[in-house]
Amino acid sequence: MLYAQQTTTVSTYLMSTNPTTLRRMLPWLILIAVAVGAFFAWKPFKAVYISGVPKDIPQPAFVYIPTGANFEQVIDSLRTNKFINDEAGFRWLAGEMNYRKDVMRSGRYEIQAGWHNRELIQHLRAGKQAPVKVVLNNERLPEEIAGKVARVLETDSLSLLQVFQDKNFLAESGYTTETLLAAIIPNTYEMYWNTDAKTFFKRLVKENEAFWSKNGRLDKAKALGLTPTEVYILASIVERETNHNPEKPTIAGVYLNRLRINMRLQADPTSVFATRDFLTRRVTEYHTTFDSPYNTYVYTGLPPGPISLAAIPTLDAVLNPATHKYLYFCAKPDESGTHAFAETFSAHKVNAQKFQAYISKKGL
Image 1 (cartoon, helix red, strand yellow):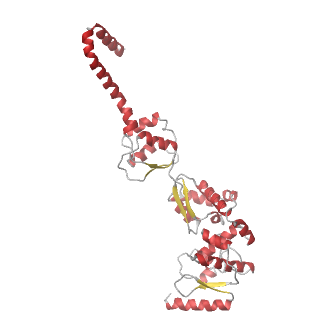
Image 2 (cartoon, one colour):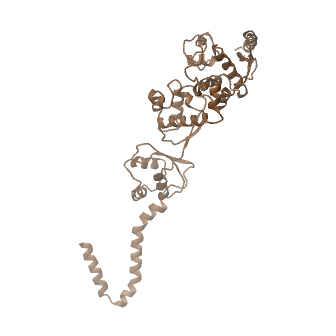
Image 3 (tube, helix red, strand yellow):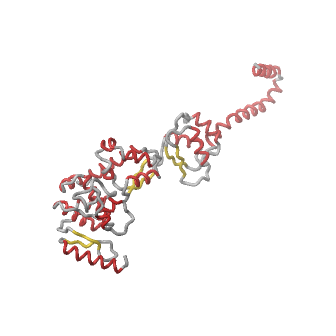
């Protein structure tokens, strides 16, 4: 009512004003109207086109929005990392752009220096995540994998271990708690930060299937009389025997020769895995006599599961083994890290004695 009265008063005043005087006042009236309009337009204009991400933030920069986060948590993350220089403007524009929700879109988002609030909100609202790299290479145990993955993904190691121990879930993909490592092809994987534990494992299985579908690998495994999982188990042993890729097909051939004649593999890495004595520098009687289905000194055939992740060159070495009659091998008496091979036990004993003399001379 007061506003209406004031408006009426102004209108009456203008109508009663001398036309000449009114013409003189008109520019000032227009200027006042423009100033008032600019005053009320400045705040939204500033929030949309001027305020935003400071231009001096280090690059690259990322904001992490946890799964289930609310709007206040998003604001807190942006504020803590100094990604917004006008919180009030951001809040207002987030409402206008329908970004503010009860549950916000989670993820890891790259933030560009100098973005206006509008650009920042558009980016977060669209869910354009920046992927992270998950590197898997030589882990031996599910616990090691879970710990490593949890350092780069939102999911925690406990959630990953629960998936690794979920027999029903693993069975859906054809794996068991013993063979789950065979699902993992060591590589660098790009994934979204908010990938959950089950989705993570399903991605590994998908990559595994892609690996086996190439280069006739399934046919090669069948020709060896082995399943892909059995190939992986054997490859995990070869993986722990040598880092020297050129001799991996030869070592694979030794173990395949032993399997064909039902001879125990007597692989040192399996006895180390059985005892979990991963820091040992020498395999002793304690290791070779330790009662475990993983110990191939005690039990004939392959262990029930991989003793390590197996790299692609090692898997292909098993699928493409060297053809020979070797049944034995031991480390050479030098610093090469390679092995001497033998067809008979007597020849192997000679090689072993040379190596024993070498390490004794070295004081090992």
